[in-house]
Image (cartoon, rainbow, N blue to C red; front, side):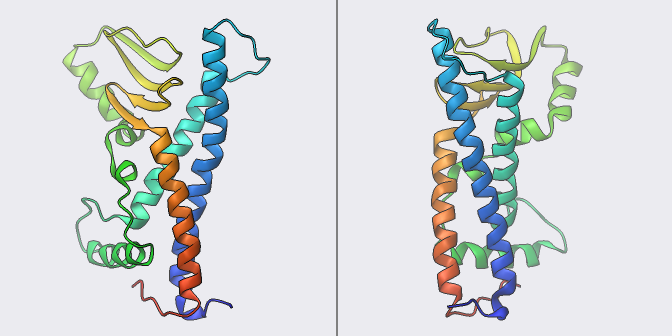
Length: 199
């Protein structure tokens, strides 16, 4: 059964959510393979694969930016101003349509904001002159030295994305995206027979 055109807005918005869930899933497949490779490498096993740190960081960035896009679509957060009423209405309508998932990892801003607003984090560190060692990228089984500020860190053992001491557990993020994608599919079926006003 087709979805009536009166639900066009809901379909477009949910399609965006689903696309970002799929981007997380695609990046996750590559990150799982990369994590396995780096663990094997640490154990002295050449598995014949390659997983350059720059590629890993690129996939981490996909996960974080897709998570941010989902959060902006579904969660009001601390947005204020004239548009916030319309945004709140959209977020409430979509979340209700999706069964109000908790999304604790998607709601978490620490690592995502640090990667997206790295300039501001660097301003604080560099102005305070408290850091003597900085690593742009760290991908290894061995953890970085405690005195080193790591700006972009992929931990293959814990399967986490990190900035400093802040962490995004990738397994939990992937599960949230998978659940959200299933909820979107159920919402599409619901939209075949129900009218949903997003705005």
